[in-house]
Image (cartoon, rainbow, N blue to C red; front, side):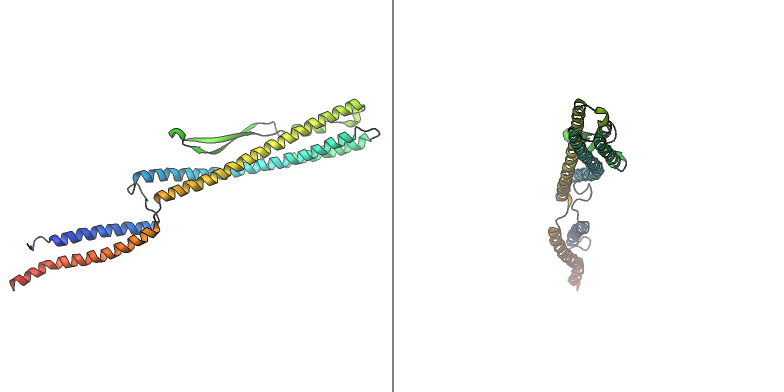
Length: 277
């Protein structure tokens, strides 16, 4: 039955066209933004997860940048400690030389004084941006290395390391006076003391080296972790551009067909006029 009051065909065609237009608009948005999920209305669960993980990724990147400053401070301190260790080794060698008979202790002491002065210069210069990890009493340093959501609780992770007291080593070396030792027993005691300080300098440089490697490893891990998180978020919210391109073309064809169908349906009431001719 045909009616001039209700055009069912036009209503169906209009609904189809509206659905096609909506799909076309959604596809165009995904193509323009590159996102399949850009808000909570697209997929509330995925959107919430992706936003949380994006926040974690940003924090990891910021923490990694902060660790670079710490690593530079530790690396500078390690360089200074290794330099002090070199001077300490030379110091022990000169004290060992002084153990022989007939050695001019004054000349050897002059060399030792120069080495002690060089040690002090190395210690004074082994700071990065004012961060001194070698010149004072050893103290525990704590640095944030990441975040965790284990057990549903958000918290920061950290590592701790100890600064070193190169100043105490230098002071001990500077206090050795071969000229006042005189006897073989006292010179031997000076050698034992020097060897002990050499061991302390080796321990200091080793400790800082281990800390530097630990920080480097953590930075490498943070970099990989950030890449993995970013990739995971991408898989959740990014649009498949190949599929969207194909879908866009299909919607454009459907839009043309739906428009033609609506046009034809709108002409149906005009056909009723032929019945009265």
